[in-house]
Image 1: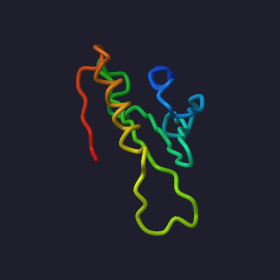
Image 2: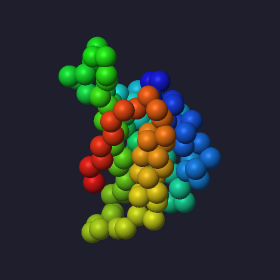
Image 3: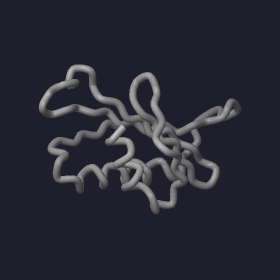
Length: 102
């Protein structure tokens, strides 16, 4: 929960509307939206790192699409949201390793 709250604080004022973090089976989620686009920011600890001195986390960003979204729709804000999250993580000195998968 601490990581989810920390990340939400870093994203406040970014132009995205953000929900408070809430618990899911696999970790925590923050809902984000801008104009008509909606995203799930999902945060979970990797099972193998629970209790380890250095925890490993997975943060995924998923664009929410409605039932009638057929075909590929380019998002105006997906990359911006990803970049803002990555920037916040890189600026935190306690985070020592960061990888990104597109």
